[in-house]
Image (cartoon, rainbow, N blue to C red; front, side, top):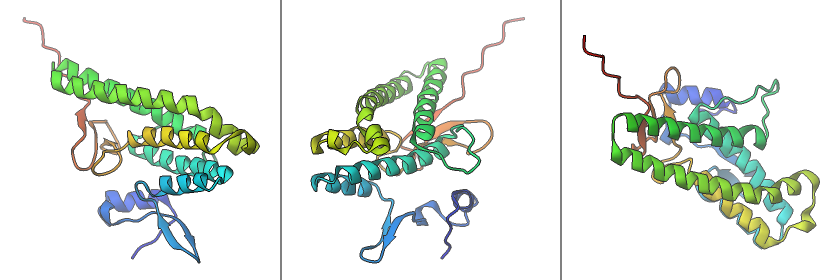
Length: 220
């Protein structure tokens, strides 16, 4: 068993096949009462909703923000997002989520232009569906964002009700889901370094090429 707190080392172990990605576990917290809790799909969202249902809006808002920071860092890693440098390595939600959103939009656009160059109508249509769904999710999350930011930064808990924080949770869970494949996990840029070739998931359910059709050379 290997353990690490270093995300770069974890990524290196995975890419070099020292460990298989499916065999890694990322712990979210560990308490004496409950033992370890891992970052599992749906796990943290259920915990956030449970806090809100118990009328612990401050706790729900705080956990939501911390969870979004973690997930956004994962999205940035998978999509090769350029994030503003921080000497202490700490980035808050605004540093991570907005660049991740912009990057995924740009990647889908590049993939669509590639498909159009090949006149691959089915691929163009599939990408456009993803673009539309993502734009809608981003718009909804932006509408709801006013509620979580004041809650976390200024402790204005009294201004939020349970139904309001649950609406925030729904909006961001819907947005985060679109950074992932329904079957396997995060959508990522492949390869991890060098020239980008594909945006894809591990199982292949999502796979779009960035390569455009070469222009035909004019006749001599």
